[in-house]
Length: 355
Image (cartoon, rainbow, N blue to C red; front, side, top):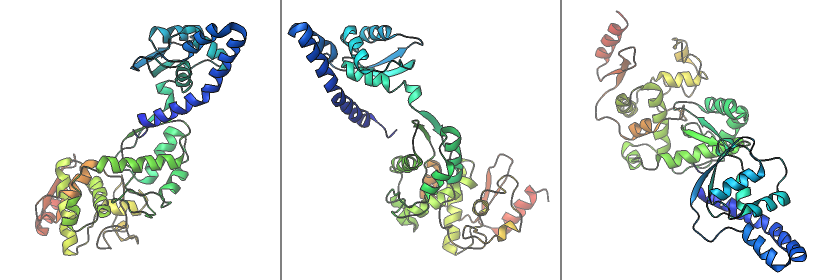
């Protein structure tokens, strides 16, 4: 996750500053009414102990009172005094209580920091885990985000086509269509996350996830990093098994070198807006007028057609060493048969179709 410890630490430092005034007022009040000794003691109650801060998990049961929470935190060495906690709670915190659940805290916290951590809500209340599978388009990713997070799918699609994002060298600055770069993974999103933040996070994760792949191979293969993602997106839709991915990749590269049509069904399905993905294409579909139709246009489609997996990206950078030009599914499971001979391709295809 991108939201790591540095961001939490920054937020914690802001909390400390916002509570200094309250601590000061409380101590001044005690100076007036209880003398210096009482004020000094209360200040110690409010501040954290000088010991090392060690991570600790705190679970607050349903229906816990402020006194019970104070005792629980004291027992776990989160705060040094239940009295300081109760005083500060009455002074600063609204009487709405805290959510039951599990919290990440540390030992030797100040009362202000402890209350700030509780006010942020338990771990499960902070975010909603959402999984975006491989091989999904921007629209499908947006639909899933709307289903799980209640965020407008249309707004996510609009942001993904805004051209404001880049992740170099893969997604160049100014690229209007971020298709292929909403990295498929499981994310934890907090309530109120905006469409812009969702798109930005998925694209940023792409850069993190793929950085260790052998991108220097792209130059050797005669393609740009962006084109690698285009090829990987086709591999993602065409190969169900990892063993077949490098073979599909070599078919793509071999056809490109020969100036052949790629003739990849997945590009036509994309051109049709995802229609026919389950029913299969007709001959009329193969003639659809679209730059994505690799039956009527040579070369690569203009953009990726989905968000590819790491396995497909790796295959696009490491194609099999073979002269394959054709492939066809050879069983119901989806394993592919590969060949460089067109007549053999037709013969196997006929056999598989019961001819």
